[in-house]
Amino acid sequence: MLRAGVGFSTAADPAAAADEAVSQALEQAGLRVADAAICFIGSSHAAAYRLMLRTIAQRAQTPQVAGCSASGVIAAGREIEGGAAVSVLVVGGGITAQRIFVPGLKGRAEEAAAEVAAAARPALGKTNLLCLFPDSYNLEPEPFLTALESALPGVVVVGGGATEDGRSGETFALCGDAVGSNAVSGMLLAGDFEITAAASLGCRLIGKPRRVTAARHNVLIELDGRPALEVLKETIGPLAEDLRRTAAMVYLAMTFDRTAERLEHGQYLIRNMIGFDEAKGLIATVYKPQVGDLTGFALRDEEGARANLNLTLEQMERNLRNPPAFGLYFDCVSRGSNLYSIADHDSAYINRCFPGLPVAGFFTGFEIGPLAAATRLLQYSGVLTLVSSGRR
Image (cartoon, rainbow, N blue to C red):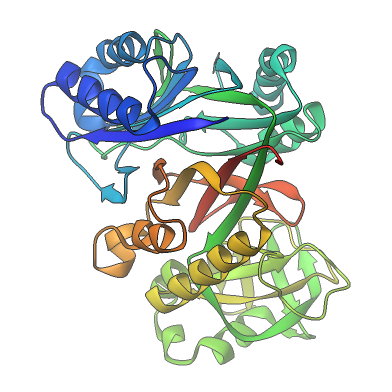
C-alpha cells in the first residue's frame, strides 16, 4: 500500500531546512525509510543545493532523490513564492523509484530524450509515472517531448521547467549528488498504482472559435476569410488599443481535432502571440497554424483561471476509482498571487476537493502534462497528478 507525506521549511539554514522538511514528510507518511524523495528548493539556497540533497537522502535513507531549483515551492497547502524554502515529498510502500539525470540539453532535445528513455526503460513496471524537471532556459520542450513519447509509449510524463528568482539567470536540475544547469533531472515511479492527471488553464475563451483560412509558417494570415488581426481586434475590443499589452493578456487557443466545431475543455492548448503587422493584418505566433485548424482567443484572468481549475478538479474527482495517496502540482509562475492577488489559492481549491492529501510541487517556467491523450508542453497552466494504490 502506498504511503506518502509532504513537508516544507522556510528556515534560513540549508541543512536545517532540508532536515525539517524531510522529517515532516516522513512523519506524515508514517515512514522511517522512504523509497523516493522528490524535492523543490528555492533559489536562496542555491549555494547549498548539494548539501541539501545529501541531507534529504540521509534523513529519508534513500539514494533516490531528485528535483530542481524553484522560484517558489508548494507543500501542505502552502504556496511559498520566494525566499528560502524547500518542499519535499517522500513515497514508500510497494513502489520502485529510479532517479534520472541527463546533462547537455541545449541544441540536442531529441538526443536528451533518448538518454532519459534509456535511463528509465530498465526500471519500468506495471504502471509508470515519469516526473521531469528540465532547465527552462536551454531545452526545446516540444521536440524533446515528442521524442520521449515515441521512446516511452504508455508512460505518463508530468513535470515542469525549473525556475529561479531572477538573480542568477540559471535554473538547476537536482539529482542524487548532481547539481547542474543545462540539464534535466527526473524520477521514475513504477509499480501497481493508478494515475489521474489533468491540466487547468489560466485563461478563459473570449469570442467565438474561428477557422484558419490562410497561414504561412508561424503567421496567421486569415481567420474565417478575414485578416487575422482584424478578427482579433473585433474580439477583444478596447484591449486592441495597445497591442503590446494585448500580447501579455490575450493568447491563441488551438485545438487538436481539425474536425472540431467547438473548443472543448481539455481539448485545446494556449499559445502566445509574438508580433503583429497592422498594415497587412497578420499575427505571428509561437506555433505553426495550418489551414483548417480551429482556433480562438483566450484572456488570462483570475475569473477564467478559477473556473477552469474548478472544472478540472471536478472532473478528476469523478474519474478517481480509489482515494489518492499523494499528489504533485506544477503551477505556472504567472499564476499564484500574481494572478489571484491572494496566497495559496490553487492549493486551497485542491485541498477542498482532496482534504488532507499530501501535495508537493513548485512554480514552473513551463508545464508538462497530459492533454487530449498525449504529453504536451503547457503554458499558464496548473498540472495536478494524483497517485492512488492499485484497484482493490
